[in-house]
Image (cartoon, rainbow, N blue to C red; front, side, top):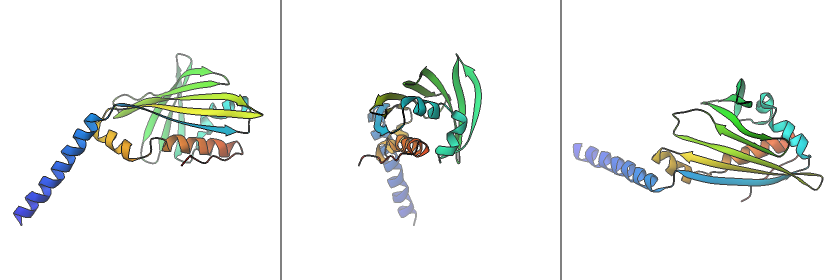
Length: 172
């Protein structure tokens, strides 16, 4: 019995060490991007993504938003989800075409920013969301590689499109 327990424990430890070593070899930074077309003009898209208080109405993963005092003239807010909360700060705001937001919490195993570009396209808008992510924890890097690095962007664009009367289908 003890022999089997030792073998099973050794296997789990070996797997954990192996995953940690793989994670150490993966880059800390990553970039993921998605592009879509919406039928609304850039000004309407801009107004929607800058109405922070309304995020829970079109981003189903959010339970609530708490707006915080601005820093350097830029919006700061805390997003509450079922199992966590994150603070964000806008770092660049150039209406109606460019918004950059960054995770403003320190001490997390991850961080990064989203760069959102909005440009006129026909009678609507072309939206590009680029995530410049940082994953400090080696095991989180492995998990990130196993999961979709664009899932959060896809959810955001799906909610935004729905709010504006459009639809978004993530690329295969």
